[in-house]
Length: 288
Ligand SMILES: Nc1nc(=O)c2c([nH]1)NC[C@@H]1CN(c3ccc(C(=O)N[C@@H](CCC(=O)O)C(=O)O)cc3)C=[N+]21
Image (cartoon, rainbow, N blue to C red):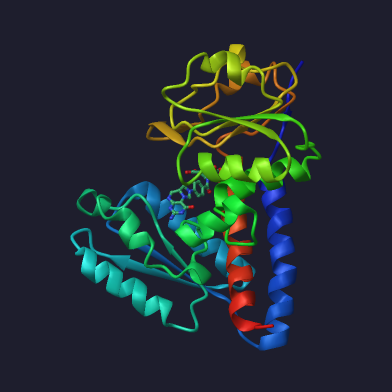
């Protein structure tokens, strides 16, 4: 059997078109364009590619996009001052601090991220949004796991009652992913570096989400015949060679559905960022 390849490009176009409808309605009603500001600290080349992609997508959609480039050696206090200025800027509806931060700032990552007010936190990283997600209240949801859910839904893959296994427990992907699947009535297992029998647990999954950050970690023996396999990994193993956390060659022979890398979840991450920005603007501009 050969898996159906879920195209991030096709689904991202669809999701951006949905966001565009909401965006146009909002602009018609208020005369104000939503604004997204991305802060990037230092010169990490991968981050620059992502930030450029986000900027380009905003321009295509008609979202005001601003990129704030800050120097590698900026102090924590100065970075926070920049965030606070954006918190108070009514033309800015969404703020995203691109990760990873330079080494010297990494110990303050949470402290800095949490300065972004929850209303403008389009990444969904603020504890208020994290807490709301875990209790099932409407909130800003992290773009990557939300993109994975949209991918499953648009592909017509039923989540209710299914065994879902998430490999990885990061705050950015694994944990919110588990919460989103649980909210859709999946039976969720989260695996990580201390998990015993990981391969066996993974092989029980109807829906397998790979977010470990290890190149081609998931092999065919860890996958149930016909499963939906969502690959969140982005591992650059050579200057021009990008692979996921799934061994695509072997797993695509066994799975029912699989997402490629590149061309999979990454594109949905950006589409969901557009949706989150429009929703943030809507909530800030239309008070009911
Ligand atoms: N605060 C914050 N929020 C993020 O959402 C965030 C972040 N920091 N830091 C880095 C990760 C990674 N990320 C991606 C976005 C788009 C693609 C993407 O467009 N990928 C394309 C192209 C990949 C390529 O050619 O490099 C693809 O998979 O086809 C990938 C990865 C957002 N992230």
